[in-house]
Image (cartoon, rainbow, N blue to C red; front, top):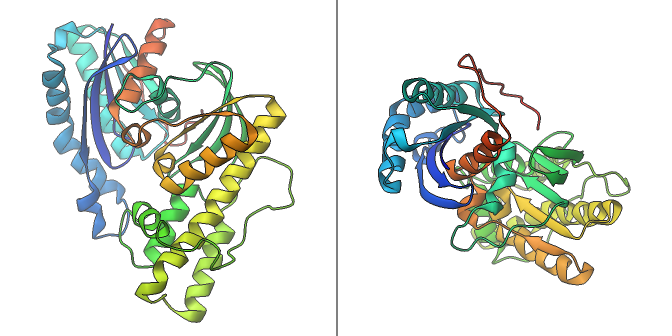
Length: 336
């Protein structure tokens, strides 16, 4: 089975062809980072226009690199939410147009389900996938979730952020520090050179036994410190970033360990853009060794938004018999 996946939920136009829900035949991503850098964040209208300009060339390149003619496809999968409504519409309309022209089935895919599927792809550096059931920590710019995964499309939310997502906190703090956009990668790089104990930033909800997250208070603590003391000197920036990153990572790891014990699970999948963070990956590896659970981390390339994960989730949906009508629309707040 050959499935084309189209991903346009935010600021990357991505398309990929996946065979039999495993083998990645092609994986093409057109980034808009340079376009949005001057604004310090993603501008939805600008992102929409960029997707309009690049979606056809990206899809054509994905088909060409896979050596697949459009008529050879068995189905098309497009992200229909959550995300930015304008960008989502570009990808969904592209998918529907192809499906109509080729007489092929089309399915709308939840972006978060795509992240959960990424670890199941055969890709250099990707681990063998976890067995069901397993726990998933999904951390990205827009979401921070703990999920019990009993199978494809069989997911139960155990905990979520009450305000800012972890990735959003990284990018907003990076902006406060003048580190540019996207700033999460810069914070991670600087943090590797700093002392995470140099500043005692708060950990949210420390005495609560639930599995929810909160990062707005941490962001406020950073803003208050900068307002009172000014930007750290260049030599102090690694310590500042390491201390902030430790405050985020500590909470993510602590809640994941708690969820594994409560659900009597032994496998932890970590996915989403923040799963590429080296500090988080290292801390989880230590926790896995201490607690005896198995850790599954997709290769960093598959942690960020890509079309292969949408094609993978789309393959499962088509195999389940799902088909979307040609009036398929988008939902920017689509729940998992």
